[in-house]
Length: 111
Length: 114
Image: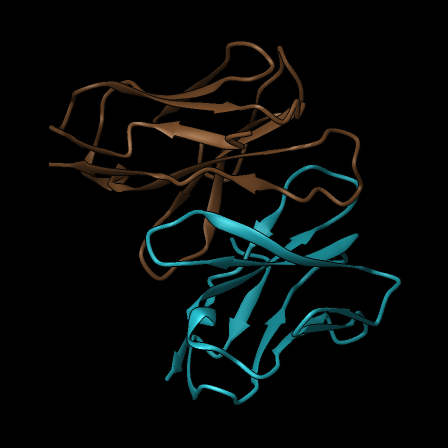
């Protein structure tokens, strides 16, 4: 079973617009991570937010975490065609080593 | 610094054949993982190795075996391949003991079982 579920499953926007993806999870977590996967490639770690953090920034990325609602959002500002990829959230339920991945959001940024 | 490497990149098997997927990392990580990714789905953990000499089952271990050959290498074996094992397989590694468990992924092996 998958811990995280992303919403929407697919998102298409114009270059320069902001993209927002959401992730909901079921059980308590130690941290939540976002990964990007370009077509035909492996996953690349983008950003991690700990359970005691509410917001985190990294370049054009902004992640929020609401543990009371068991949800997180990933905002990509001023999107570029190169941001076209699938984005996955992954949760770590404790100081364990296993991450559980959601099913992903396919983002398409149109030039 | 190659990171995580996987071989082969592509493989086609017939039902019942066996094969081993190879994975190696050069980041001196203690923990290594094998995932499978099916269309429209996220990654599902097959097996993982928290440290050299240990292996544990993940969410979908049936039909697979693993070997942690040394700290660098972690292989995944399909003893008798089935069409349901058609998938993309990813190997990953991370530092043991890190509470943040960021994982580094290889490029994947695309396996088709006919």
